[in-house]
Image 1: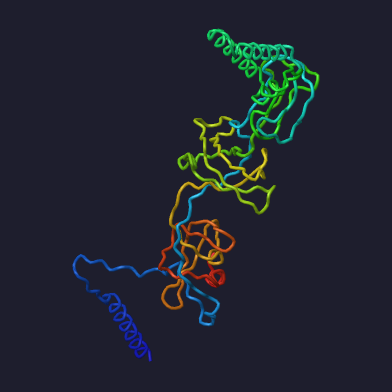
Image 2 (image 1 turned 135 degrees about the vertical axis):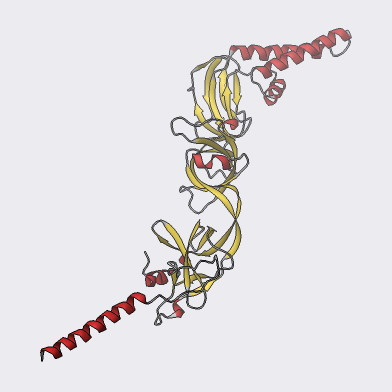
Length: 371
């Protein structure tokens, strides 16, 4: 019995030894390659490729080609309207005197040459009398006198007329004086331009010296718009660029103007560059001190338009889906901006030949399980 067990044990040991030797001696199957050619590792799955499940309804997804279009490059601006300082004029006293009646006050519109107030001035009355005397002397010497005397009388008359103009009398005032033949006690101060009285400095009865300001008149047919530009926009700013803007004071209305001044230095308080635009105001709808917001057109560039629903945002990045072969879709990042309520302008990341998912993009992204 013992001998039988020994024989069985020896057989088992022999079988085990042969199996072990066979495992050690086996070589892996050889891969035949041409000399110098590496074997590529298996490709990893494309992380941006989405293949919907078999039960996914393809009717939920619609595609279309993006629409190429040239769009203006713009800079968003906010600013404030102001008076055009080139269209301000001061109605000042050209002769010393006391202010009599005032005809217009702040906020009233005036026409060029319209009387603003009257000044009582002894100097003006004296100049009127000199004018009347010079005219009488000239008329007396018109006939039967020496030519030299007539010429001298004519020059004296012209000098008296010019003095009245220097003191502020208009051609209409001088013609009226000639018709009446009597000196008027008051000199009329007239509006230098058409516009709006924005400031009055003297009340009735006050005294004005030569050069004192009585009123300031502003022509609001043009206004200035001021805004500040940031560092990244300096290079794009040029004189003559068009600005389109709106104001909450006039909803639904759009206005335009052009850049007329770019400051030569940076504002040290805000570290921005001040810019000024000339704004036509033919309807007088705009008012100084109105706040506005708009876009400054700095050039043009090509873009691809897609519906806003085609674009979805993940972690501060915009994406679209484009259709690959059959039921496969690829998620690609794009850069652009919202053009209006229905369209998105893609500037980078998309080709005009790529069919874009215009409906169902969010559903595809959810089904992909990607954040």
